[in-house]
Image (cartoon, rainbow, N blue to C red; front, side, top):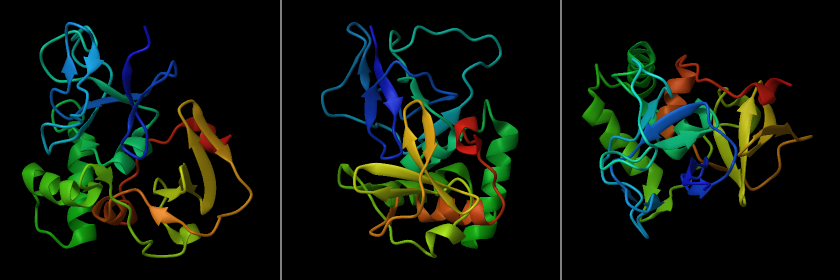
Length: 206
């Protein structure tokens, strides 16, 4: 059974056989008896996390327990685009690095996790839909790891070049198209500009 628990850069949760490099959650949004998502609920908490897939030997039945719903991402760039941030428990060093870059990029002084979550929550959603943002610069000048929308496609910025996202990895395209919008929340892009370096799937460098 292929579970519906893989997140796209648009924040949509799909079913795919492709595995992810990171796990995360948005609270409890599944039925543990059927291991299916709630018909409409896609979050219950503002803390949308990016976690490692293995931590201190903990073992779980994915979507089979009555606690948080395990979600998976191709890489950290995908999770950041969807509006998630690093977890302070299982990714403490990365979370602190993200917080420092978030502060530098936004001008906030030592923001706490709930403060970042409130900002990200306002930036990632427009009603129930993914909020799209105006590009702050030409796409080739955006920091590595930024994700842009071109219609239904998600494009990764890496070394100034565009890479088309898919559940299984990235594929290089010739040039940046017109009519782009930004998927990654502006405050996260500011953190990327300030030096945070997200994990990006190796296919984007092939």
